Every structure is written in C-alpha cells, then in structure tokens.
Amino acid sequence: AQSVTQPDARVTVSEGASLQLRCKYSYSATPYLFWYVQYPRQGLQMLLKYYSGDPVVQGVNGFEAEFSKSDSSFHLRKASVHWSDSAVYFCAVSATSGGNYKPTFGKGTSLVVHP
Amino acid sequence: EAAVTQSPRNKVAVTGGKVTLSCNQTNNHNNMYWYRQDTGHGLRLIHYSYGAGSTEKGDIPDGYKASRPSQENFSLILELATPSQTSVYFCASGTRKNTGQLYFGEGSKLTVL
Image (cartoon, rainbow over all chains, first blue to last red; front, top):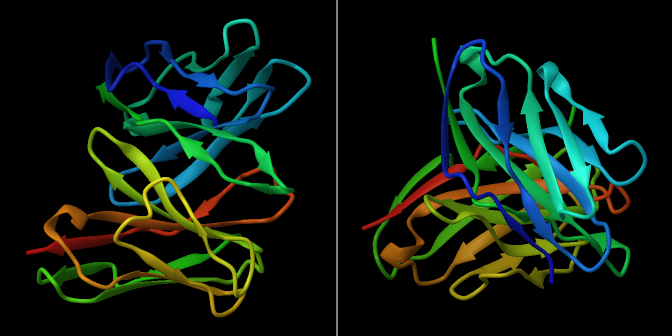
C-alpha cells in the first residue's frame, strides 16, 4: 500500500523568503508524485507532478519539487514566496492498480506568509 | 479546462437522516473519486469509480454508499447520517491513463446535527 507523510502541519515564513515543504512517500516502486495547492474555500489544484526523468520538476507560479529515490522524498521549494502563496499544500502519491489510479494524499501543510 | 461541479455546496442535516451529495463532471473522464477533508487527517478516500455502473470502496467507506449512473455523475449517499460525518467532501475526476492527476470540485460542507 502507498502512503504519504507531510511532517509539518504548519509553516510560517516572511514574504520574500525561500520555502521548502517536506514530503516523504512509501511505495515499493516509483509512483507518480504530485503537489496540490488548496486556497481558502476552494478545491485542490495541481502544482506539479513527477514520474521519471530529471528529478527536479518545475510547476506553476515559481514552484519546483525535487524527487529523491534514495530518500523516498518529494520536497516542494520556492525561491521567494509571496503573500498570495498562503494556502494549504498537499503531497500525493498515485500508483496503478489494474491500469487505474487511486491517489493517496498527505495530511497537508498550511503555509502562512507574513507580508 | 476541467470542470467538476458539486451540489449542494452547503448542507445541514439531522442525525439519522439521508443525505445525497452529487457530483457532475464535463471532462469525459473515466475515473471519479469522493474524498472527505478533516483537520488533522487531510484528504481521505471514501469511494471511487472507474466508469459508469462501477463503484469501489476507498479507505474509509463505512457509513457511505456511492452511485455512478453515468459517465458524468457520481453521488455519495449517507443513508443514516451521524455527527461524525460532519466534514467537507470533495469530488474529483481523472482520466484512466492520466497517471492519477485529479481535477477537483469546490467542495460540499456537510454539518450533521
């Protein structure tokens, strides 16, 4: 079975600072990995995804994530955060089951950016 | 862009009552999912479907039923609602071969008194 751990329930940073949100996954092989963002009173939107190739993947709004097979991690980064980045961020893992996918989400990290 | 619409957006129900949450997608996606979101638990999968007429149990199916009468529609049914089912419910859709990328609705907030 697959699982995802986001160790930080809440992260607070100042506007302009760099950011790293941590994610570790558990799966026997390399699954598809995602980061989603949820703004207040909205559904989730995908930021980026990874399956193979360059371990650093670029997403929207300056976000990137780095896959590490040895560490079973997929951490999200941004060089300089903006107050509008305040949201809840979810890491997700998805593996195939008979050709279909059943994504599993972490508990989420609430990001608060102080202006 | 993908469009997933949930109704109702807000619902107050009484304990023991029946609640139906509806989801409609216009993406022609094969797969649809129901998650609930609770503080401290993140998103947990309740039921999912790989096509019309099929439903599968997710990680926390107890107390819930699902129905997929067509490609576009996927309902979550609480036959006997309980206060522990107070939550925000999200519907999502995805293609069979799209690696698990999901498109979410805006959520349905259910309060069971």
